Image (tube, rainbow, N blue to C red; front, side, top):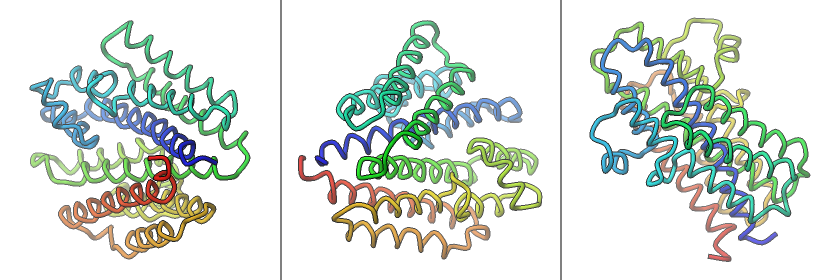
Length: 305
């Protein structure tokens, strides 16, 4: 296949996964803020930080009020990672690769985009119902791909993009949650945050089944970073990336980089890290994921750049 088409499929997958993860993050934070005992703007500020958008946000808004943050994350044209912009970019990439994709997957993306555009016209604030619809719609797209797509190079670029994006977002959420940026937190609220984290990733049942204990920092971290069976753990994401890499040609540079990243993740005694150690570990992981993205570009997409 053409390297141009491979890149479009990779980014199509990343943008759809980003829509789902962003919708999850906002939805769970909205629920969490109902029980937050302090200044609620701190919770909304942390979301902007998780998405690495402080600079862009600050050019337009002074405070981190709920309505401002929701509008910025959902609709803001100047925000390259807003849900609306991600859907527009997904639609563009699907247009460029429509010959590779099941017709129902193309229709699914267009339906998601059109529904969300109608939300923007009708109101300024996106609701939890619409966020759930985005989550379900994104999952439906990947379900169509998995059930109706023959394995081969196009499938591997879609899978690789999905799990690079997922691993990056999970590491960002963990990093934001684990840093001690709220000095007045109570123990009860910290526990609530970890429960919220599991809910964000639809991990409550799987965690309870494997941990057999109460929700606490170390066990949640170990589960979300190193568990090999949970689909949204960083370990599983890296394993899926590795599966795609070994199935593609010209993969020597990528195989070594993925293996190093996997090994670094498992060596860590992450359940014993303090906030600084955890922050350093997650920052290093994010750099390695950026390096993987760069290597993917150089290995398979550079031919048409």
